[in-house]
Length: 290
Length: 288
Image (cartoon, each protein chain N blue to C red):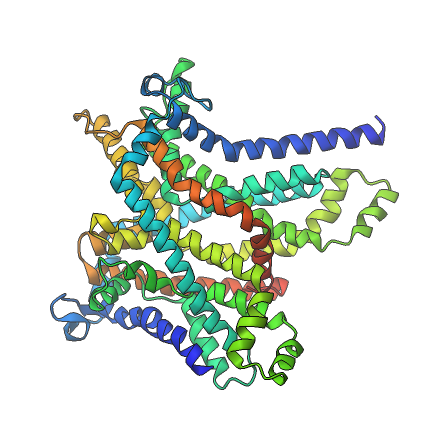
């Protein structure tokens, strides 16, 4: 066998393996999409694998006509946007001064921040704190506790440190104020890393669920994930009760569950490809320093 | 400048250090009405009580077990995947595969829980439907301990393998291309090049990540075991984080839950610092 053909075979084998893995990542999504678009009859008879059978949009029509669901989506979108904006504001406000060598107490501030990466009070003291601040069952309970991620902060500090000092100095000689230099020179140069951190904060909030489970009681303040969780939980419970021979509880139809899962996934999939090229470099930056 | 810095500092003091003040209730007979300051000191009584709870040891064992099995199953996957991606010549195929492989990392565990149910459910899960269609017995993926464990580990690989490749691919971009050319002149096959050039060049990354992962043995996320677990498999699915939630916020035993949380935080700190120390010693890379 010549070297050419063995190379060729090698290439084919590798491409096939990767393609199989890609399929392995996609298949669960394809199945859920197929279920969401199939008729209930086809689903219960187990015909649906990765292609929709008896194609229909009823589940989606039902999701979109469910006011509570739409309200929850709107609420989660606003919550995510507001959280991301505030997180970015706080992270930038912390990172920029900490890159200045002449800042008094810089080391102390860094230590204060880094300690929190390795030690925390745990969920009970956190819960009690929220209770004492009268923040339970309010939107702020979902925003305030996670305003600055120390990990993201360190990524940003190391990025700011890589911006040539001379740029900022020359701006200052030209009479630019401290704040102006930050806004019109440093931040525009940091767009890739800012986009990465924004994506991380946004995904974190969008996917966040434990805090909502702990802090939120009013159904009108349920983020999408908590709503979804109840549908999933409902499944688990019914599956268990059926096993024990108890009567079937009222079940959400499979197609509706599937449609809701897709409904909660799509927003992430929409923003994600636009930010991908940034976050890959952002993650690497974090890895080198982090 | 201090004005700018003061905002985040206030945040850190209230929301990060505030709960640390609350840790003292681990040593108090905490009473909601008397508050943290007003409750009586009981020393290590609550610790004694926790260390006598069978469930504490179950959740501790499960935390180690799930983390360890996860490491065995999920750790090699991104390495293999990254090496394969690195070998692929076609740029567009590489790019598309990477885009798709990263996606599961951005999906919440709640949604993954929903997908897992659709795939592995006993009654209506796709896999069991297919098995039954083939005339085989359905497998109780979600309600029987052994199969549940497999499901749990499998979803871990699915969620994290693609994302994990980023770091290894980053390490591979630094490899000197001349090494490959030299190897080619010497007549090395591609497998040989992978074995003698590609793998050794990511070895420091592998070792660092492995050690740091070992350092996270007691810290376990809440969402994944909570969403995928259920009462039928609690013997395996109850971990420290879900145990704290269950005894603390579901049954209101604040003191006991704080004790478990504190235990986890302290042991976790020791593990992390220890692994960081070893990592620095061995590879010169650490997290601090």
